Image 1 (cartoon, rainbow, N blue to C red):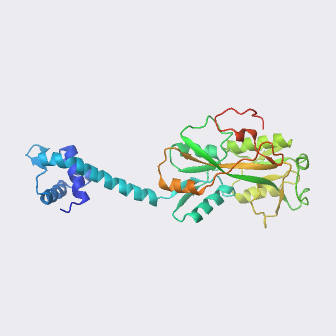
Image 2: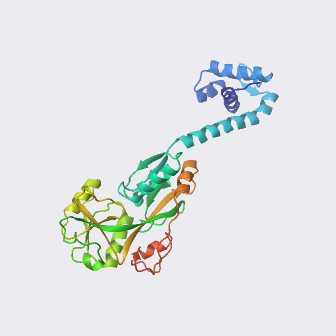
Image 3: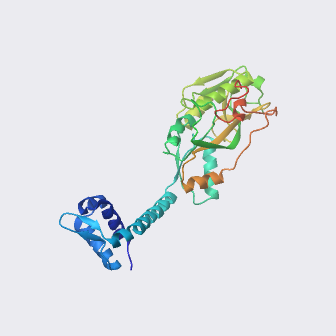
Length: 321
């Protein structure tokens, strides 16, 4: 026989309800249409599946025998449909902000795996993205996994995927604009001036630890609304410097990018996801994000906060830098 899925579903739902009216309502069809589907199925099987009276219905012996296999066939069809929909829906990724490395990481991942379709969001802080990750409203988020509010959620996993050097950005008429590189002593007079990180508590923690390590004053201005607003803030500084990733291209902005050395600050980027998220496209994205390693803490050429060498939620030997 050639049974179709609508007939099987009609039979299974009616067997569960043992009432044509309730079954029809669950399937959003009329009772007449439901009866036709079951009748066609019975004709194909050559056996009655229900005993009908004016007041009730019940399964026949053939119906009871047929029900487990029919229910599994319907469930298998629904799983297959869901798998196709899962594959078709884009993976939802929070990239922190458009000016940072995660946007490039996701772009490179999608270029290596053309099956990856990505829906981006920019919550501008891992601390802000964590609640959405825990509810699985998004599939992955990027950020620094230390200096977050509260304990690390045990249902979330993370992987370090990039360690990005930071540079100073100054206007072309800045007192330090002629330097080819900057050391901590060069920054102490004017200090560091940055937009307020707002909800990005992990970025605020990083900047405060960096300023303490370099012995440099740190000042927060108003939050930056977009890249152009950030550039405008940096252009307004004549003694303090702004910080950004070395990979940012300053050409045409009126800013100069100057490396910071002895040590070079490194910003650790991790991807974070829910351990119980089953989506195949999330696994495809993670497969394209190669693990990174922090520098040796004894290496004087580079700096990351000491706490970043410790897994979130575990005590660090030195919480001060």
